[in-house]
Image (tube, rainbow, N blue to C red):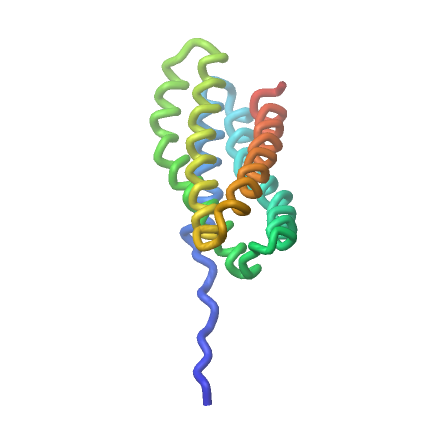
Length: 169
């Protein structure tokens, strides 16, 4: 008789961080506006992050399968959760500083630039965690260009949604 191990449960803290971090950034960016805008920003940011990840994740898996470097689908799902957890943790860590800077700034452009910087840092940390969880043991000559191209597309799409939803551009 062989012992089977149950798959690890979905990490509730990781899921909470994936939502709370972007929500805190969205709320911080809406501090100078009215309450409905603040709540709208807080709701849109996690939707953008999770939506773009859900939209782009199958493409990464298919491309990595074509490049013969695809990890098992279970590892991709775990890596995505780790990436969202890292992004959320970074965003939660930077949200108080962003809230302070937004609330003391008088320029809407400065606030938008600060939001871009915080989101870029959080995205870079999340993408680094995702790459390491998926492709650390794969040939870098195939993994780095593939993941780099995918990451650029993902960030570009997320940035466009950010501009539409938060900045109104």
